[in-house]
Picture 1 (cartoon, rainbow, N blue to C red):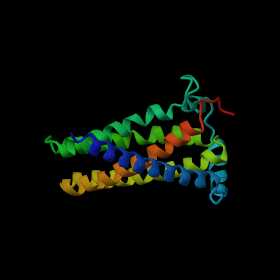
Picture 2: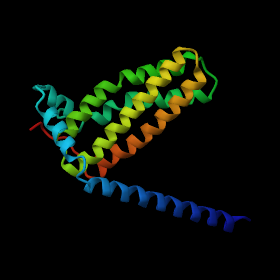
Picture 3: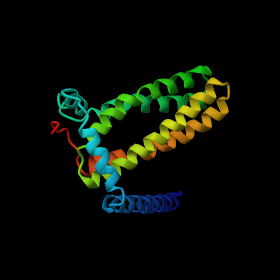
Amino acid sequence: MSTHADASTSSTAHRALDTASSGWLTALDRIERSEVADPVINMLQQGIRSLPLGSARDLLRGRQLGHPVHPVLVHVPIVCWLSAAVLDVVPSGRQSPAILTAVGLAGVAPAAIAGWVDWADLPPRQARVGLLHAISNVAAVGFYTASLSARLRGRSAKGRLWALGGLTALAVSGALGGHVAYRKDAEARPAP
């Protein structure tokens, strides 16, 4: 009986989502075209490319897999942190979210190293958004480090709040990383 009201609500929700999506893509397009950070990006990319990684560079780039390894490695922190968020809202042992937060933090380094190696060879438009992706990841790590610290000191409510900030930064980072990978097609390439 309320099909008209349901259709109206659905239409309003679609318009709101379309508006948000359009705003997000417009902002990303502006970031891609902005050359403000290019001197820093060029310096970082040259520094990363000059690291004596040898055959490890191809391993970090995922050449043997046929695709970048960074998206594979990011699953460890993402899954741990999402699982900790679930355990924060359902009854569980108090230590379980802390353990998952710690394991997630431990998984950051391999994912970040692989990501930086991939990023070092991206063209400017992708590298600009990629730098924001990295900054969002640093924010997420900071939030989750604060969360773990609070949890280990017995302040689980404060730990949950820090984790919520981390989850928000992680969501932004994921959207930025997805944009770099899929909108501009960052594929596995042999190291130059």
